[in-house]
Length: 168
Image (cartoon, rainbow, N blue to C red; front, top):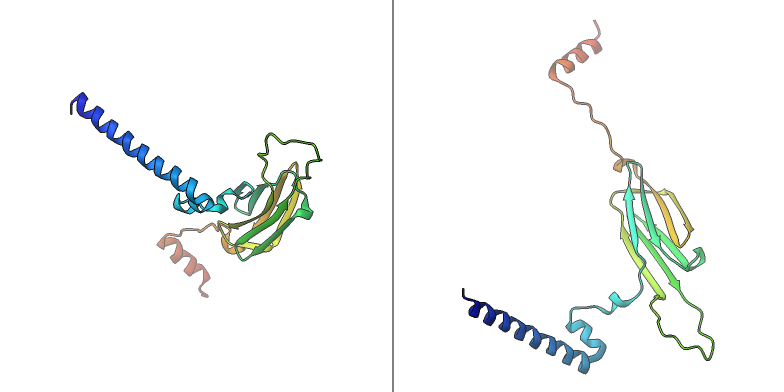
């Protein structure tokens, strides 16, 4: 492929991209919020939802949820089967009259997160506390989820064991 062919292909790609972009801008201008669906973006992506980290050890699952500016009275936690649900509402005080906002990046409003657990849990072994804007949960695993050590025996060990157990 010559340099001329490569430039032509690149230029054609740029022209195609420019046309696609122009179409998207036109749809956004004419369809407003409905354009989100045209772009393949759902409105729910723009609502506030706290970030979650989940880790585990052999006995427990640990969940940390970022909820800055919130306290326990603004949160509702439920555990149904292996599904953890957290709902809450974060509201900021209204600005006093005469105050102009120049940036408003902190999100507020209601949210709901549905978080599937990576293994079976025991609903009777759950603790939660909140500190420094982080909700900490410790959820005990169900016995069925806890690792079990399996002993492997050889045939000769099984015969020996059977001989020891048989009455003489």
